[in-house]
Image (cartoon, rainbow, N blue to C red):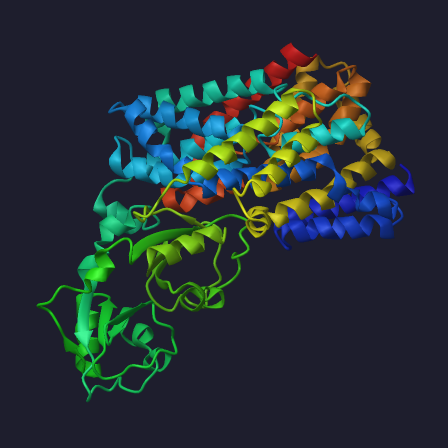
Length: 598
């Protein structure tokens, strides 16, 4: 072992430790790798920063922008109706239709994007259809992951694999090179949930369980929140007169929210903490009846029980209640509700926080948000929609103001289909996809600023930072060294056993580190092992890209993390359903690569 190999293996071990232990964010770890490699003399500076210009990074940026164009035009909101119509009253048919739909979309969109797009659809179907939300969301997430194996742009690992293959002087994979294997995986996954879903998926339906596991997506109905809204008038002798909302501390003292303030014919929703209470104001108060009564007595306000309680609050075009889910890798993770400034920035009132299986009605403003937390808010529908467009939250609740821009929607579809057609016609895939992304901007589907917001820059820096690690593994000989160790352990073993070992290694690493990181670490090793064992290097790389998505056992995959809270799932739910799917996934992936590529 040379000194360069030893140094790189040390960097590799430290990288894996930092990612698995979550001591630092994965994109920060990737940036550390990017600057460490040239400082140690393992790469030239140009190589260390070459990740930003790689086709994998360009392709992922392009797919994110085009996917955002489809989302913004409202085209995806049209999916719920046809799925319900096609699925009919049969739970199995409905499930199969939904899973097939999300798999198809995920073939050309990042897994997390497809899952986020379909999440409101699944919630709506869970409320209106024959299946409960808890029986839908986990299969939906798994279908999004499986759908990523239907094309070479369906997931980050496969995009990275194509880049690694090309960088090593081998022929790139065609857009649909992986489709036969991906199709087998999707069909097997759908068949599994249709046949055995009722036995492995939780069914939490009664009110008691909904209260015990409040992270259900039907909280609006189960809590009957509008029944707790009261109207009150502030008289001249009230102790509130002259105090700001912050000084009055109604939430911390009584657990009562001020949803709106009406004065001189003007209604202000989610009034800021600096709003001053004045005589003659009408307040819309939300809280438990006993808490509101105590607040009325102590503050000297007059309840108005025989008038309609702020009719504006019942008009979805003026105001509404909504559930906002914190998405994995959102820039809001780690920030508190107070830091975000829901009232100040959007005029939206945060009512409750569902985090870690607990419902918090007060004193949650300083608590850092985590991926999967569910925030219940109230405010004007258009303001809540603006929150959704910030990309930090996923909106679960229909607001009644959804509209479809058919003109821009058609242009978005033309851009997306055109990019795929260019790729099929032989144009370089990164060039084809980025052409579609630029067309999405030029044709007015999204603005330049919206395109920037659509890109997950954490993912971009993760890729750009870890790609040099893959380059260094080959240039220093570390990949050869590790492949040699594996070869000695597998010497004389049949091809299927070698493929199985690589598939298992990629699958296990993807559970504890990002699928992209697992691909970049394992793919160079697998390709060198292929040379030693007489197996096509491209086949080995493709197997790694497929199996890096075999992340069903734990809610560590970002898609699983996204759906865990609204589905009310526990880790044991993933072990039960995901374990069975993992056992199904490995032989299909290994067998498919063996039959088609060796």
